[in-house]
Image 1 (tube, rainbow, N blue to C red):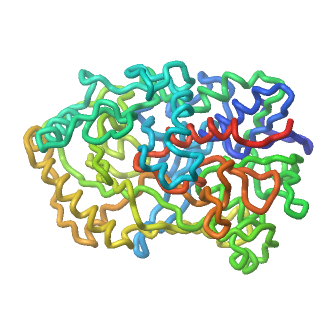
Image 2: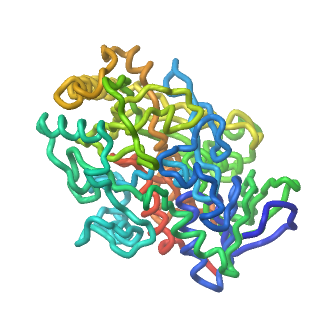
Length: 497
């Protein structure tokens, strides 16, 4: 990996934009062909070896995504029409996979009913297996020799609130769920984690860093892509900005792996998106794809704050989540620490139980505010606009409050009052940072952006491989599915060396 700083214009066979989870996997896999020159471009800082990573990127018990973190891009957002906030996306080798909580749970079988036929669960299972080395389970559903280590916290390491929550959930009739990465998973049980000895082992550590010595792989950190370049509808390269100024990279193949906010943002800046929106900002249209930035989804999370009735300790590098309760459309998360402790600088000091809607109907929109790449896009979640979403959350919050007032949980915590009105839900609303579907996969150019081989409709040489192409948000957190998609895409992309 070359250091940040001045460099001349350059070229590559394939340029991968964004060294997050998907970009790390793709760069590692595509550079296995020694005749293919792969250039990975990342706006954030780079590190050559794990020992160079600062402590907050190593400690899986801390989420360095607060407002003062140097490892994230902060984006202002509107969660509802009346509730604003901000989200953070990873800005470092490994992207959000380098700063998250290590939750590595697969999508469910029926989630893939919304995907193209060539992406059925049976089709993607080999890729799920190949990415992981599961320390707890083997057999037909699991991998044992993949790059990503997966394990579940043993009971003797559980936080007191983890133990108490699992006990009351089982007593309430929810089934025990020993393996959340098995088909048909539901109930209460341990979370699969890509953590080893308290350290995140994300895709950058597993796929990218071990291969930086390849002569055909270059990582350009500290470089922000501002535009994809075209000759007509054929990709010719990229414009990037570094500390030394503006540069051009020439390439006939570009793969966008910048994430579900930055990828549609870059597409629109480059003339790929809704033609009326782009022309209104003076951007020349390359491809009229109205689905760019449209109808994305995420997992809204309502938090139920509480106080401990007695002092409770948390061991060093303890994961944020050890156990979840999953029903058909709800996930309950008994966090092992307050967000104030998990997310330095967040200012959220109370411990809480998270109640998350995993199959939301509400859909959001990402749009440019100007043609200036330095202006962040407008991100509108439109949470709680669906009456069905509000009803499901109300019922789930009521059940969560009942669990907190029962048995071992009532002995440990003293929850705040819950009234489940629309106003109360909005006041306690956040997001899981699982934004997906802003450049969906499909065959209809009016409602999708890429085909089932990740090729952007209407242009040549441009691909997308990140959570933006998910046709629908999974009913579990998306990280394991994102890595699976990148692993599978590395064999599907029709690239020339």
